[in-house]
Image (cartoon, rainbow, N blue to C red; front, side, top):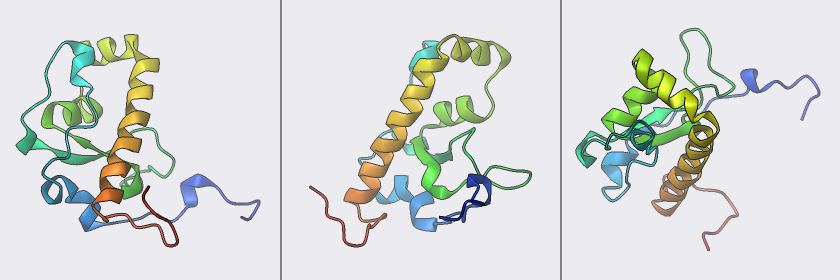
Length: 128
């Protein structure tokens, strides 16, 4: 890797199959599970979408991060990621370390579903 490499300039994966994963993998749950932090429940399964993680290198003006940095989120959890109300933002901030930990867990869990469904394939790798 070049010493001039910066994560913000890294190539971004754009994948319709990743973004459609909640429809392609009916059993994939909302992996975000942020609603519980504000004493709410996740929305019904039929509201799941892939949500781009905030604060990930590569985000810029009018550009999203790579589709590899997405998690499966129900309507309520996706709203909490993108547009929380001021009181929700404050409540989530109280649990900031736990929320960040949950987002990391959500990314790993989402990737496991994508690998199992062969939406993400690692050449030379195997699922064990």
